[in-house]
Length: 148
Image 1: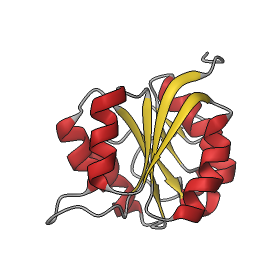
Image 2: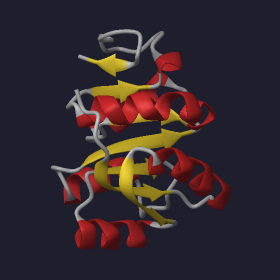
Image 3: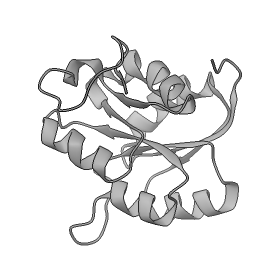
Image 4: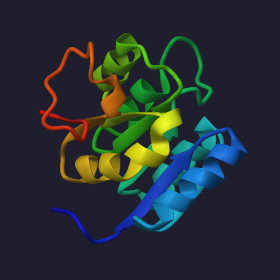
């Protein structure tokens, strides 16, 4: 079980209000929280600090049809990252997890789900917001949203 604070997390979201609220939660779990608002800054920060984790808004601007999740995984396959999204469709969750994300949290439930998501991902499990479990094509480990 992981109880100690992580070293560093990068929070990437283009919405300033979202950044501030989520940062407050992450500050309790990590020694350093770096906030960025675009893809270029996200990749520069990952290259410079080698974070333990990244928490990234799915709607962060990318080029073409490639999702931010696929681009992160392709560039940094060892990095654990959690996607934040407004989308509650199971196809969106499947796409993000198939692209390499370690977790998927609905923005509307970030306050309730972020601690469990970070804990699960740091322990090597995949996390999906529990409200998305119905109709999801993977087995759920327990009521926390962790996946097998």
